[in-house]
Length: 144
Ligand code: DQA
Image 1: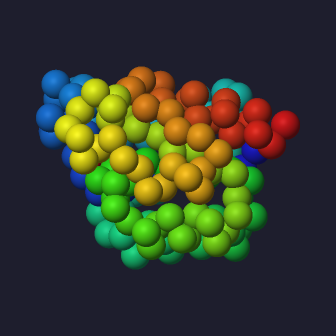
Image 2 (image 1 turned 90 degrees about the horizontal axis):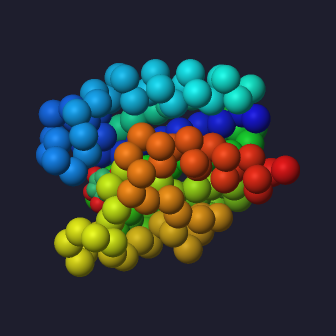
């Protein structure tokens, strides 16, 4: 499968930000982990990150143009309020899985709501770096 992993704001600060919540793995190491594990499973993957909402929408439109087969997105805090990212996911009509490293439901109340989830095939949260690989398997199960 040809996959795109999109990470939103502050995820490039993994290893620096709130280590008690997100762990000590640096962002570069997470990217390497996702890429290597996806390749072992026979997939090609591009892992992209931006702190800007519009750029995340550009990535989603790029996925459409490049005939990506599945999208895995961690929208960071945009999860909870970005109707623009939600509309972009609905527009491209590609299988999409929302992921979170932390268990957002065990955290502050504002994190309990996702405006992205309803346009995704499903949501995986709370498994740290493994959330991304569970999402790879989930996309595979959707595409068949
Ligand atoms: C996050 C959860 C969000 O609530 C938060 O704003 C993030 C990271 C996660 O991966 O657990 O930036 O998406």
